Image (tube, rainbow, N blue to C red; front, top):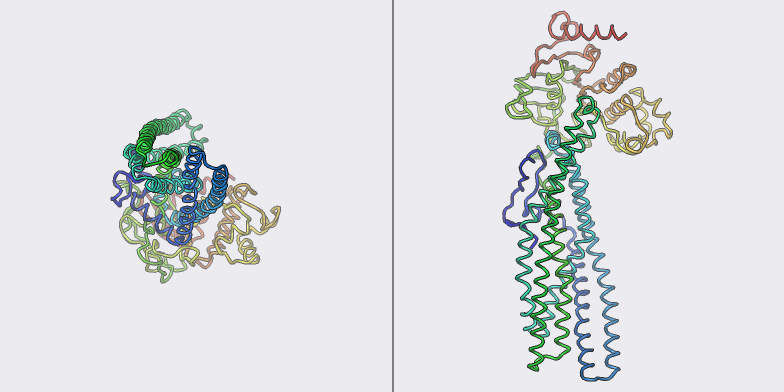
Length: 603
């Protein structure tokens, strides 16, 4: 009943119109297959939990015949001792059912929590492997919503809905069996309610699946808009765009509210149809019991037990069908997680390859983030092993894009990029001893101690190695002056590091990682004028002895490079040493003159 209208198609679900920028969502069959793989290592636990819950439910079904027995004893004026014995059996049934139900629910909860933990781990692993260009196109809101709201919704379903649903389904199946044991005609009477319930479930699921998927997408879009508006509030004020962005937030919020109200109306219609099924079924069982008692083929106690059995179905049937609401919402969230976790590893058809060196070869490279809007045009570049090359040019010249392609962030649209004869997108990760490391101006300080933050680059580094790396970039003095030295908690909720110290920390991590090829994309841009020279010296020490490509924020960095490559409008227009390019009186000479004049003016 919880499947979508077309469960046979193993395809990736399409997002609603206007959501083409979001990450993929798995189809129903693919989602079920992913869950089966997650559950496979927990087969023993799953079987044990099912067996214990079955036993608990079966014991609980003894209540109705025992109550029917009391009715018969009262009608026949039986001995009081028989009623006392029956009441004692009821107490024993209640205690046994309570103990076994508690054990079964704990086993189911353990199964759900373990599976959810494995799903979280796989999501994080695969999310970290996603190409950054895909993540950027999707926006932080979509990925954040999946790892927060969607995971929370699934966790809630695992902790509450899953155990209740398992118990309800077992109760329904075994209660129908018990009705058949009393008299097959009671079972037929009870089954009158089933078609109405089945049609209700089908009606609900057909509408709930697309609705909840649409709600998840709308929530992601709303979160992305909020992130953009709050994160860029200073820019919005500067350009007087507050009202425009407030209008966009309002539109996103109204869309979410409208979808939520559609869900409320859907649930109300769902419960109204269920009540009709209950009345039809109970009336049929009562009429059947009356007829069988009149015929003498059933006692009053048996008819009472049958009516009690059917009445006891109200709660599990309603719970199971009502849990479709949680199940469909959780299924929509699960499909969004599986869309990320169950896809093939991006850019990995085989295992990571090892480069045969650090020489870089770029041949005929063109690149476009959007079709028809190229940002690089037929770029050719060679960087020899051990050479330090600076990329310079005006903003928008294509420097960062070329650096990203060489770093392996994404493959070029046309042409080839090779590092040591291997495409950089096929090289191993940092933790496996990477060939290429990229340091940008957007450096993140992870929450935790400063030492732990640094050990992300080399988990087994000793305190002495951490201090040596900090000392090499002139950061040891301020690091040891922190309240707790290397044990000081930094990042969110901890000691705040300014831009220059954050960049110095990134360079220290670079030294610990010790990659042979380094790409620095304006890695000193966050330093103010006072710290610029110190940070440039730190950069020089960090890249010493390595092949380096430096996207220069300050031309003083370019002047110290072995070779300078000048870019304009996505093309390389000049290449040579600092002195050669100044003498050529070309674009670099003009940039140098303008930069030098600015420095003179500032001084």
